[in-house]
Image 1 (cartoon, helix red, strand yellow):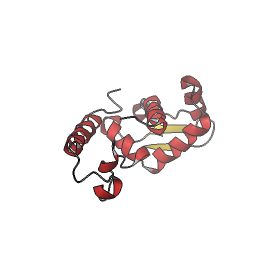
Image 2: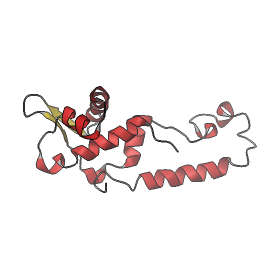
Image 3: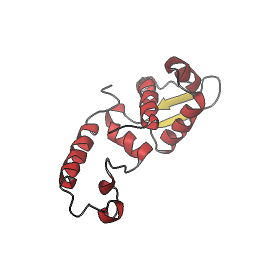
Length: 134
């Protein structure tokens, strides 16, 4: 399994904002971008996604920036993968819809059941990792 840059940087962003859940103070994206050597414009896009999903809020002005509004103990890596990647499967036959449409050997594939088990285990592990635990 390879996580995308969106998930990676989104995780960095939420980790940087973790302290704001308790302090209620805002942190500017430029500061986070500089601290972690990440592209500011890319963080802006990620922040917009996280804001529309109800994880963070923003405030304009000199004391503005972003802060975490959802308990970091309740935000899992599985949540971030779902938000930024949607329902992505490890192999074609696991994609949503008819497996036969996605892979011509799905009906007779000897490893499809194994991939199903692997996907479930990966999802279970991702669901145990929270922003608070990082």
